[in-house]
Image (cartoon, rainbow, N blue to C red):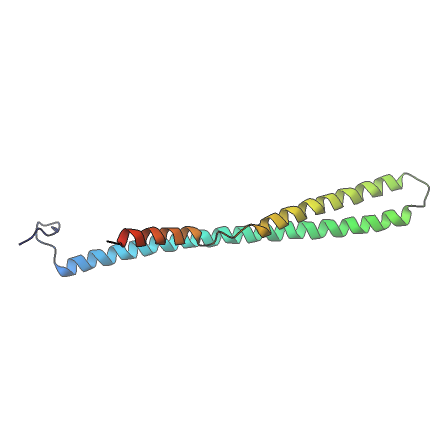
Length: 131
């Protein structure tokens, strides 16, 4: 008789013991992969949240900057230092809006990494199972 795996009691492991161990290992691997998948989904949710925040900031600042710019044009012909203040606010809000747009475009154009780690781990698992 060839050498067989020994169970805890020193007896040869039977078919059902082997199947039970295989099932336990398979469930453990599946659990690990599902946890990894959940982490990747959470990272993607955070990335989308950042996109929404920067998009909201950009829209708000450009809108406020446009309003101040309109007021600036309106007041352009008045006699006072109001032009400097309104122009400063216009430049400030338009500048912040432009920076937010650049950040938004950077995040939006970045490739999504969703499921990349899970796919890499599954590829490693397949390579280990090959003879």
